[in-house]
Image (cartoon, rainbow, N blue to C red; front, top):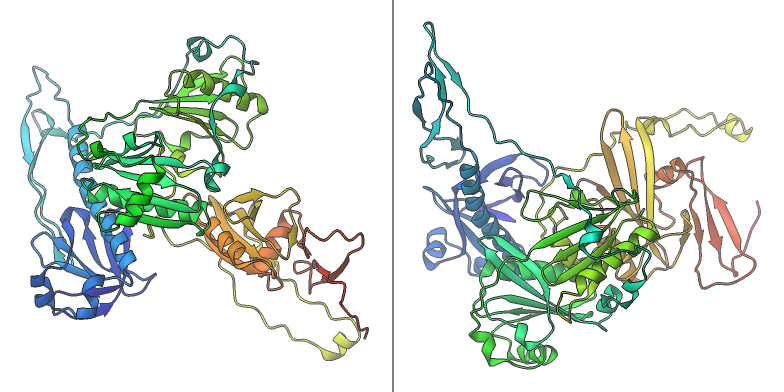
Length: 603
């Protein structure tokens, strides 16, 4: 992006939005130090260009549609030129959401921070106003904040007063509440197979378009936008909201006439998430509004026909209640209810050794951890089946597996990685290696077989505690492999290498290996599916091509007791196969299958 200064001059700059610091940073280089920090508190709004701004900044006609303005308190607006119209819209929507939400967060913090006055006959209580001094952030001035009155306790003594500083509100960790959940649900036999009669939603049928689902995007309170599944019928359509109809290969986003831009921006985020992260970029997104009558008519047919009442609905919706059940292995605590003190449950509540049931309004989900037993999974389905009895007839149980979550599940939690292309994390941590040392080679020793290739392992000595997860990439999802270390030339794979440096936390490298004969769709899907594996967003990503494998890729396999064996294809059923063992040292050694028409020459 390009930053436009207040005098109309253009400068090539990078912009980055830091959610943790609530700042928009403008940099000279992508990874350089910020030249300007604009805090959310100083931003009034984000808007398209007005004729006055175009004239004042002398904006070129070709850049008008790519430029947007950030209104700043007591300062000239800052103008940003985006590379495309799509990126301009995404940045404007994200910044508008952040600015709107920031005001609410400040109000909540002010309400929470209240100091208690300690009354004592010998201790006079004095209320002293504390005025926040104005701060200045170059090059844009910061507005002086409104003075706030903080009540403090002052203890009078003959010598000098002692002032007790205000204390921060204590945050409580989520606790687990002991209850006999099975008895409350009327379940007497945990071995019952009644769950086989449950109505379920198969996500694989959703992906291929056999079972379409309708989602509604609603703003209940200011900034509290939620995504919910609703009944697939015309009675569900309301012009105040945005609806997404997932038909597999085609995703329809219907923008109601009365819906606001925040809800529409959320709809675009959900549509993009389904298209790129769940369908590998193969799905088509159709945006429907007043300017697309043909698509609007097609959408109405799919939901059951046009309903004239959708423009006049006035039913007030309430935030759906959420119930969360965790199924463990211990008989004394087989079913428990995790508790949380946030608007939505935290993703950190989920653990691989459990199964969970989530009951939100008219929706039901069963989440199975990777290490959950079949007994836990069956009991989770049994609980969901009993909860389903009080739901509408269209409510199905959506089964979700760990690392294969649908967007509807992710939207019920706080902590899943988002989709908007805004960098909010630090630069990836990498292992620093020294420059290669040139070793003097004696030609005669090489001819006599005395020369040994110097080891290259020394630069990896600081790495400890290796773990590896490997998936095969399909067009829509990643599938755990059953034979790690075996690769096929017509496929692509995703590898997550987790390691530790000395006295450091876990670090990750995400690698996607692309076979020589893999299709373009499979190669593209492997790159897209690798996004989001590391939820912290700090992992380094690495593309690996067949026969051009990087040293880190081969070394990481060796450290987890694996070797790269590359086969031609799974479809070949020959009883005899020919492999070439190649490599220059212990790290580089690998086996590659050769085709039948290969010829040999011996030297």
